[in-house]
Image (cartoon, rainbow, N blue to C red; front, side):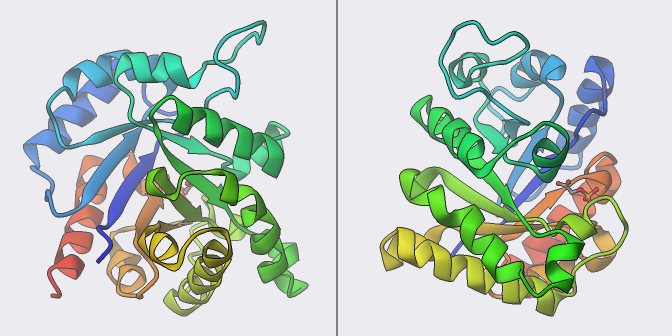
Length: 252
Ligand code: PGA
C-alpha cells in the first residue's frame, strides 16, 4: 500500500513573508496525516520555512541542487547545504529546468544521486512534450528518461510523471492517459529494481492538477499523488487536493 504524496512546486513564487503566511494557513487547515504533504518554496524561503516546519509532518523540498558537495559553481547550492537547513526533499529534472536551463537526464541523475547521498528524498521529474506524444514517442521518452534511475536508491525516490503539454496550461492528462503512462513508468522501474522495490516507489502525476480533477486522477491504481504547481500556491486549493487524496486513501 503506497501512501499518497501531495507536493507543491512553487517555482519562482512567494517571498519569505508569503511563505510564512502560507505555512501558517496550511498548518491551521490541519492537513491529513494519512498523506505525505510537501511544499517546495524558492531557495530564499527555505531557512525560515525549515524553522517554521520543525516538528511538523509537512515536508520541505528544494527545487534543485548541485551534484557536487562544494566547489567553484557560482549560483549553485549543494544537497548537503539543503540538508543542513532541515530540507528533506529535492525536486530534480523538472521540465522547466530541462528546457530553460539545459538540464539533461545525466545531470538530473547526478543531482539526484548527490541529494540521496546527503540524506534527501528525491522527486524525479519526467514527461514527454506534445510533439513527442503526437509522434507516439511517449513510451520511448519515458524509457530513456528513466534509464539512469537504477543508480538511485528506490527507498528515497519518488517519480513525477509530468507531461510537458499539461504543465501550467490548464490542460490535464485524462486519468486514463495518466494511468497508462504511470503503469509504463512502473514497468521501467521493475527493470531497474526488485519487484518489491519498484512496487513501493510512488509515482506522482503533475500537470494542471487541481481540486476539480484530483480525485479522478488519484483514483487510478498507479497514480500515487501529485506534484502541483499553480494550484499549490493557494492554501485552500492545495488543502482541497490533500483532502481528495486522504479521501481516496480511505477508500471514499
Ligand atoms: P502546474 O505545474 O500544476 O501549474 O501545471 C506542475 C509542475 O510544473 O510541477
